[in-house]
Image (cartoon, rainbow, N blue to C red; front, side):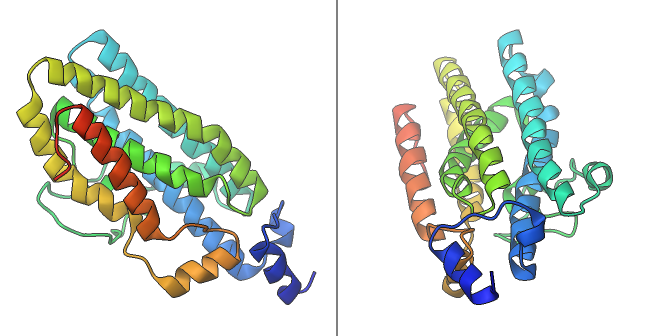
Length: 251
């Protein structure tokens, strides 16, 4: 299959199945997508691990530990696919400072830092149990929206991995919602609202600023399907409705 016919094949929904038939530019973009997911999962898990023992009860600590375990496992599933492309899986998992965080009042927008490819939101520290629950609720719903894109990527092994990961991530958002309900019942609404104000713009930034030319190139490769602005709007609607049900406001 020559380059032109491959481009048409991908643009029409075709799937690639192994590193052997992946062209160089496609390979680079696919690895970037996978690295962003793996690094975000590992950084997110590392940050949330520190909050496990801050849980107000055994049930909450079990839920937090489950999230840490499963996010690490989700990262491993995708990292194994990166290994098919030559990534050193052991060194990769141990090389980056996954617990590294910026100051709470830092503002890096959508920029990455030098450590790794994690989304910018995972560079900010959590402050206490309630703050962690808010972040996990908002980011969990963002991941839910983004998973709608990931399960359709044109590299079949990755799409299949994401189809297995999607319900696990959805359950994490549900656990965060349950945690929020308990905290609201304990009259912690004001503290939670302050955390919403903090995390909302940072989670929103995870959708990026959008580059039409880059999106079109990725769409032609079957690695993107929905523009960033549409994904962000879907998250805003979903998260805003959830917050409203909890008696909180998005901004």
